[in-house]
Image 1 (tube, rainbow, N blue to C red):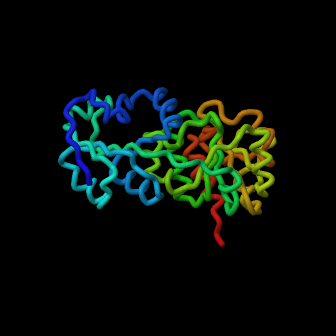
Image 2 (image 1 turned 135 degrees about the vertical axis):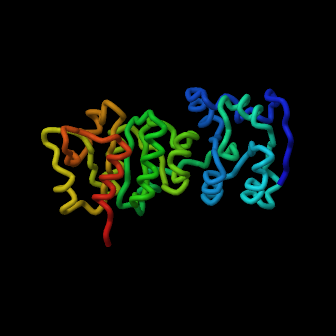
Image 3 (image 1 turned 90 degrees about the vertical axis):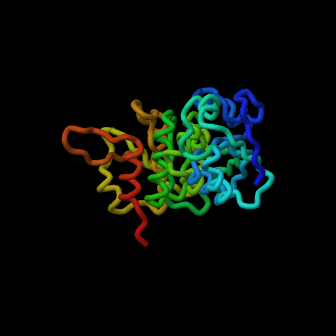
Length: 269
C-alpha cells in the first residue's frame, strides 16, 4: 500500500475530494470525469467486491489499518493521509467515517442486459433526493428486486449520499438509466414486463388485489417526491396501483412505498 502524507489543502492530489458539499458541481463533474466518491470502509469494501477500481483514498492516520485491510497488496492506489482539520478544509465537512475513496465509475450496462434475467424491477422517475434514491436501493436489495432503472433526470445513484444511505447496496443491485417513456416503455414491454405505476388514480386497483395474481415480470414505477408520476409514466403503464392506507393518509414516502410494494410482490417460489 502506497501512503503519501499531504499537509496542504490546495494540493492538486486532493482535487477529487474538494468541495464535496456542492451537489450541483458533483453531479456535473462525476459523470463526465468518470468518478464517484465512496465514503466509509464498509462502502469501499462493497465497491471492491463489486469489481470497482479506486483511483485514490483519503484517510487519517488512525484509520490506516482499516485501509490496509481493504487494499491489501494494492500498491497502485495512492492513499493520501491527512489530519482531521485538513480533511474538513478540503471536503467542506467533518470526515468521520474513516475514509473517502475516489472511484472509477464503471460502464453502465444496457437496459436489455439489466432486464434479461429479471422478474421484479423498480423504475424511478425523476427522483431528485439522493437520500430517497439510496433508500430505494436498500429496499430493492432487502426485498429481492432484481434491478433498478432510473429515468434520465433521476438523481445519481453513485452520488456519495445515495451510496451511503443505501449502505453500499447500489453496488449489489444491477441498475442503469432508462430512456424517456416512449422508448423506455417499449424496452420494458419487449422484455415481457408488465408496467405497474404506483399512483393515486380513480381507476387504480388496490395492491392487495394486484398481488392476488401478479404477472410473471413486473416493473414497479415510482414517481418524484411531491409531484408523483408524470402523465407520460401513467399513460405507459399497464396497471395503476395504490397501497391501501388508513388514518387519512393518502401516500407514503417513495422509499417506504417501494419497500411495501416489493414485499407484497416478493417471489415465493
